[in-house]
Image 1 (cartoon, rainbow, N blue to C red):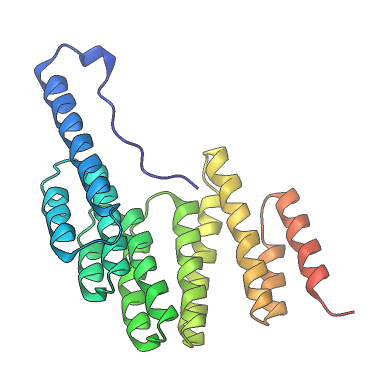
Image 2 (cartoon, one colour; image 1 turned 60 degrees about the vertical axis):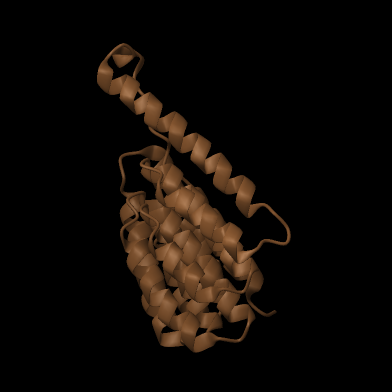
Length: 231
């Protein structure tokens, strides 16, 4: 799916002060990101090292570089078993997609360590972040992932609410004039249908599959659902 792209100064503005300032900021942000990646790549990693990396990351002025750097720190905190710090760092990520992915890492850790109630609480914040994702197929996929995690946590009703939001985002994405976004949204709808079928709701899965706008994806979804049905 589509991720936020790094902004690149236009060649037409290459000699303007504004463009040169932007280039300087991009270089500084890139250097800071590399520093964070180097610090958080240490094994084993000490708390003081993570804190140093966090300060470097927070100093980055460019949102996408800061988001990526903070994502590394979230993973470092989780590797050190520092869940609350990981969650707070994830919440500080400035871009919706990266924030959603980082919070998802925290939730995965909580589910793996049998902390379902805490996981459900974090998933509420994760859903809020996912709703702010601009690229519709990415939004649909993120919400579908949240639904799966909610089901794993035992919150079935909340899982279906998230699936409904994911389906709505996929439907909206299928109507996007951007052909790639439309195709990607149909692909996400197919995945959602399969996941709901695997959760035991074949009727709902078939409804999702039948509503897929792309003929090929719709046929693929129905064929896969047929293959899941018992003989």
